[in-house]
Image (cartoon, rainbow, N blue to C red; front, side, top):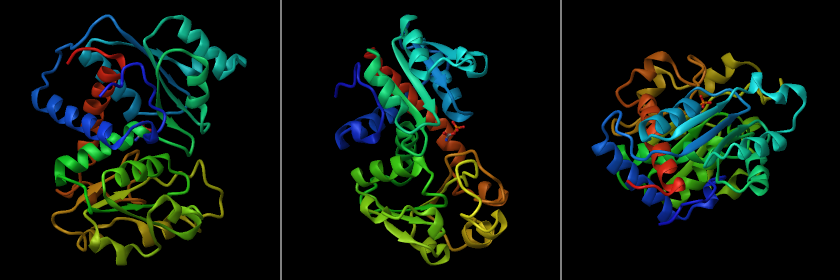
Length: 304
Ligand code: CP
């Protein structure tokens, strides 16, 4: 496998074999990792986050720290973007500082792709608009495989605001490549009209779908991206689509519960469900560091 020098903008940038290679590398790294053991030195990665983030930004920073790569963090609120500089000029100027790769989160779908066409270093998409969040999909697939083994014919139920979710889109692509069967579930207003063209089943009845699932992944209600008519209220949404303790009783004992975060407690999932032994939500965060370490290592082309 050679990912050196390549951008990661979307799951479609990877073959099935490359996804499996990355997950295998993550398993190996997790089994032998020691804190503070830099793998490679002398490289740097620029982190450009034009949208808030807790998990993705800090796990890229932690992955860089653990591997000896320096992370250059652009503070968006203190940057010249506030004076009207375009994202493309910002990216060109950061490139001139000579980092070895650029990690970009932006509210505009397609911005990382457009930037990757204008600069010469690899671009890693850390989430763009409604479009894609490929590193999240990779860490989610790693988490599922760790818990369940091979995903072939496993039933993955993704619940919630599918229409606005880059996590859903990247997960669907990645999981289908790995042979899983994906069902998306939510109110009709939050399911994209052409969802079945993505190769998924569509459900509007969580109680009917939940007993079949090997993985139940709840997504955040992205109220900042929705208009006010898409659900009558968050209370009504949680009544029909929230993962409550009562609903969790219908989930298989062997199944796992996931959420990419951030969580609106009591809307997508209750606090008691988060504490359920089947919940791997914190495991996803831990695996985010591992997967992003592997990605930095492979894309920067440095030793294991
Ligand atoms: N899952 C995820 O992308 O979380 P953040 O927005 O906190 O990075």
